[in-house]
Length: 391
Image (cartoon, rainbow, N blue to C red; front, side, top):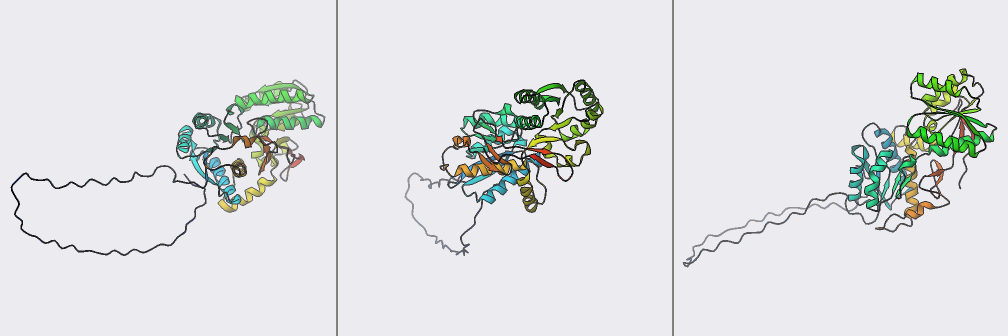
């Protein structure tokens, strides 16, 4: 576990010299009167101080726990978040905060309990929704709020906030933009699981709220045969745009089949997942596709600085670690040492800003973000609708 706090060393080293003392013992004869023998006094053992456990005493900084996977299959993503958090602490001076990393891959609940035993008053993380649920109970019992990096709205709780990129907000933004460009009939290709179900609901809700409609929707398994069958099904209807609520790999597979099935003029839409795959700009079959996500301008600058410092490229989710620390540093200005984290400060209507632009929690426990609409294409793509600068 790495302590991201600033360590200072001061003082002078002194040299101590040992002085040897010789004690001379003189033997003498003594007449001892008869009587009961007296036992010599027994020296009581000196109690050794108990070994120190947990973090050392720290009365000048707030203790913050960063809970991310630092081993296992998600270790690289977790390390990117941890590195970015350390960068933010260094960039801001961060003298009021002490951030300690805890590995959730070894057991999220165990990591949370260790963090609580160490005296941490705020949790940043975890990343995975199952881990959020695992730490929520112990954290709530201790009165410690959780600002998670998950985007699963089902993981929200009274003391749990989500900083992750919301697929619902991404779908709402891109569908409304498409409607503003004259596209009124939508179709959807939805993956299995919670993400697909939530995406389906959001597509229907937003299309109708914007004055459009959903002409067709089909789920699929992630196999070529299932994807082809789903596309054949939705192609029986007429639509102006199709939302592929899945990774870029699925979109690259689906796009040619959509064109072949009669959708030559159909606009392809994606979700915030595509923002983690810049290589999609080099795919001719997705040229002109739209998706909504945060503006990457500041992230590119952050990425350059990260590579200079750590010698590797950060994962796209690394920015969450940086922005979480910026948020905490801002609130810590009015956070009294030794007191609970002031959660009311999270509901600031003006919101916060960071590498991923403006965001706020004023309307709930899910970060509301200012999103841009991106268009895929050679040269890194373009922004066809800029993100608002604030709220």
